Length: 532
Image 1 (cartoon, one colour):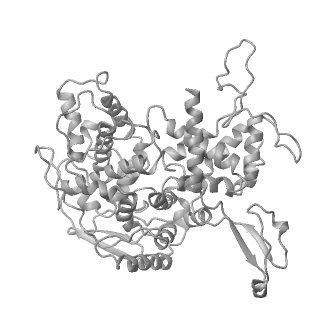
Image 2 (tube, rainbow, N blue to C red):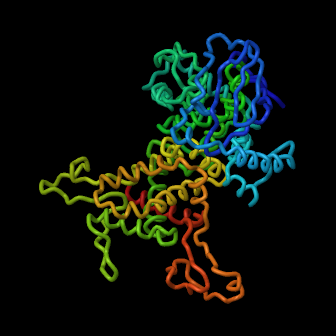
Image 3 (tube, rainbow, N blue to C red):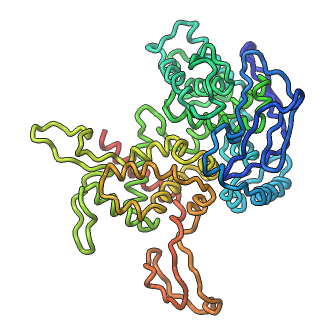
């Protein structure tokens, strides 16, 4: 059943689903140049690798700016980097990948394939850009919420106007305080992106950019959805589910919602600009994607006032996966280096007793003679490494990794959940392990690790490293296949292997199991509760 949302009617009409457009193949590692300029009086075309499509040109609605920007921007509106401009377009790889996906999806004409090992392999190799909205929406679980929608998004969008009319203020309604923060952050979201370019000198009352207006509506609806109202209404949509915890708004959500909006509008840019029902439909889909990320894919209290979830996530990563299980993931040298940096000295040599532990994320300083606490802001303080990874996880690597690499990470994240984030962070440390362990200055180490993700412009190479198995055996000859091999422990050194048999090589960090994450998560939650 199709529906259309309207703010003027008491019962929202049905939403009209997104129109099916011709596929627009796009290179996963290097998004194609997006040319949104009218080529004639009747058509507006956009070239995408070796295929073009066109739609009839009609005047945009009154009050909405028709976006035009040069072709040195990618399909999402981000400026092309020097690396992307120099890299040749791998049309054959793109076409081959699109053909495989088209063949797979042709087996499911009315839906998408269910989760399976084959689908996981396809997703890790990259989803064609024009298929991302459909596949993300399904595999993340947002589609189920969207099908149950009976006007919830429109209801949340109308709440702000009603609160202002009834005289609520920031002091009496915390959601209005969150909306004030949203109004500031919508103009800080992707300032380099052509589609988020303001048309009114950062004045919302005069704004006509549809992407900025849509982003604000999505975040405002999310704020009302995730925070209790001082006067709960007696009549709410039937399928309203109270959130797991109170959020309102948290910095970082604007980048997640903004990138989702860019992806979900890339296949229907013209209709999105000119047709109100298409804009409302896209906004509703992005809203449910955001709700699904917070409630289903990420741990509880990730964006709450206390940020207990993100603190526990940092303890799982640094204390559990890096320090306790560093040898299992092939980053034992990083684990020893972290221990040394925390203790303010070199890593203990073989047989030497390690120094007393002083903390998980930073060097603990001696208490001053006057009995006051060290604020950590002096010249002798060590920056916390968890400050870096907190931003990685809060924004799902947006603004950390290059955008086209972030999209590849999101392909896997929406399919497998939060453990992909741990695996990406572990791989970034492993790839640069040789450089990290030779850094002695804590401030230099903090800056170096902070800049690591921005160096990975080759998304395919990074994703291959992320999902490589933990060990690879390279046999020297075929006859050795018939010879028995002696069993080895998972962390046996290479020297334990018979060179005539083959060479054992540690390839990737391997999988991060749900059971392992759950164990360290329960331990972190217990520690945090004991500190309260």
